[in-house]
Length: 124
Image (cartoon, rainbow, N blue to C red; front, side):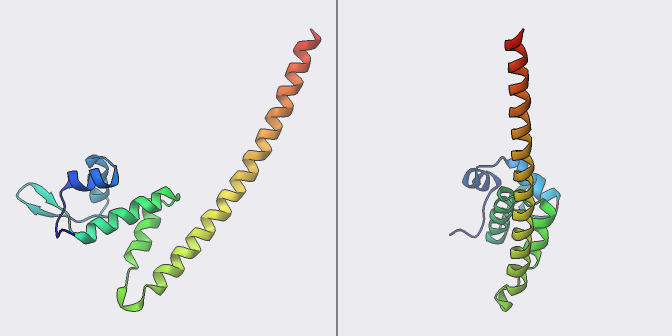
């Protein structure tokens, strides 16, 4: 493992654009060093980017990801961080299950309305 990463290396590894990485930097989620005008990302920045993208994939906002990442305390086995992450995961799952129910209801309503429309057209 290297001690430093360029923006293009991280972009390639995580299949994101350099612009996305700069956006996370602007939001204060990543804090690269500089070598002249070149951004130099640390292994910690790489891990933070990985966690940000993982959070995004499971539906967390950047603020939710930031909250969880900032709780990182290796000396405490990250108990507080893991408990918070677990709560957020459970909240997100409940929210998605509710949305799924609503979508299923809407699909049933659409099918019924579609059937009514097709019946009306056939009767003409």
